[in-house]
Picture (cartoon, helix red, strand yellow):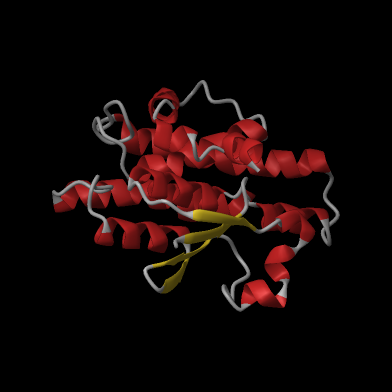
Length: 211
């Protein structure tokens, strides 16, 4: 049995749910309620020493870090591929994905926003401004990176690793009321991806309604 330890609103967990769905992998989901501090409990840290989500148990392995998990899934279950075959195109898709997963998401995830609140004492309004600032700055660069080579999706006409990273970040952007009119390539790719069942079934609202 493949088991995913995750939190329904976690961007990293959302990415892995999408990838599992695209690859057609059946899995059992074990919620890790971050707001209750379940990720800091000794029993969970025994699975994931970082105390982060997701953790995936699959094929006798215990994997962490969403992009490493997705790389494993793409290597062991190659259809449908999440990266183009051409090395330069694959590098471009990876760059799009990393721009989101490494440069945008870490600055507005839950643990950073909670640290701004306590112990730094920043009010909700300031935390929202912080999140929107980094999303807008990151999306401006991402739009420029993607626009010339995008198709229906961020790259071409089939979903890739870049879209797996984009969709959860767009969800986060809307949650903190980030204006998105300046990013037509991103909003189009997000809409195309979200129309696919693999993405729709991984959405936090779909997960919440199923539990």
